[in-house]
Length: 140
Image (cartoon, rainbow, N blue to C red):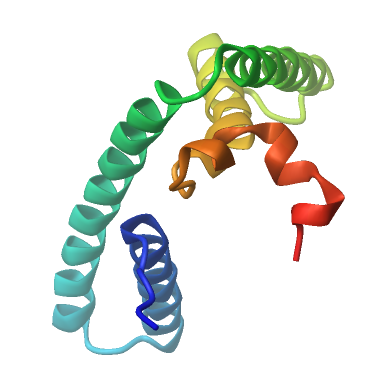
């Protein structure tokens, strides 16, 4: 039996391993020249990882049915408004003093991540459905 390793899952695992190694090397204070080279590699890999995830999200979102796309867009809008509201409340109480662009971009990123994260990792067309993912008999 041949198993297919999905590139998105492999890149995510590599990204998290690199993050753990980076935190460990900074915490322990390993030689500076090794850290500087590793940080450079980490930044390049992070940019490539983000670009891959964005491209795959766009490609796989086009394969969604209209019903599922509407659900995801509605969920995105709901979370975007929620996180924008939370940011406005925190700015009112001076918890953080961020600008409008920072507030909108962080709310957009978090809402987009929550709504469309699983689209990157789905392979088959029938599995793009939210109904398929959340049915109790399909969860193993």
